[in-house]
Amino acid sequence: MLFSRETGEMIALMNASEITAIRTAAVSAVATRLLAREDAHQLAIIGAGVQARTHLAALNEVCSIKHARIACRNIERAQELVREMQPRFAFPIEPVKSNEEAVRGADLIVTATSSQEPVLYKDWISPGAHVNAIGTHSPNSREIDSATMAAARIFVDRRESALNEAGDYLLAANEGLINAESIVGEIGELLIGTKQGRNSVDEITLFKSLGLAIEDVACAEYLYQKALSRNFGTWVNL
Image 1 (cartoon, rainbow, N blue to C red):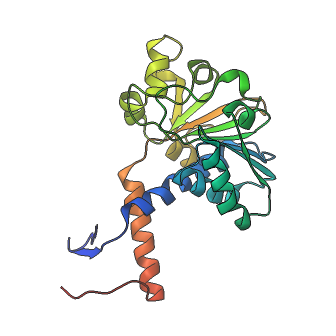
Image 2: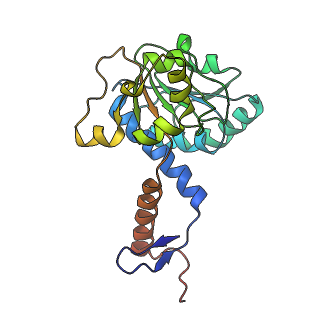
Image 3: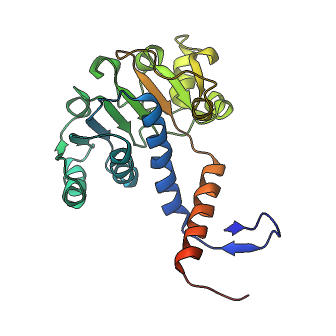
């Protein structure tokens, strides 16, 4: 539900799941534009759900992707995703059988799973790669191994949330490999220029996404204004 800032009245009712799917990938695209190398073009996605689909579309808006590989515990789901999404893109999308096969040689990596244990390991990651870690949202689960967290230049959407909720950070911190200072900054700080992003072409950068309510609100407001301008949607007098 979207409410007016001026009157407090409800002005729109929208599909929250769809908005979350779009805005999560859009925020990853912003992080990728800010942190990935300009010549990054090999994409690996671990996971074959909704976020894999929206991330294919979003990252294609900010990078010149030449090839994408999709890995999933069930290869049939990866194959299904490729059949569905390939007609939308000029670059080839390939289903592969293992996470390692997807990641080797990639310079753009997305982890979009519900895994409790790491699905991405430092030994697989090429120098200079950028990682968007978006799948886990609890203190006791993670997609990224501790070695990657220790090696990467880490950015988050909100520091407070990451320090309290992100298992990718917390479990590596519990092992003594990183601490609060290892989080370089928030994406917002990169956007306003108070934090420095990538320092070198060989550096691994990582964006840990947990999601913020303000992202949903901003997306909903944008869609509402777009619907007004195009006379879309169903209008109801209450």
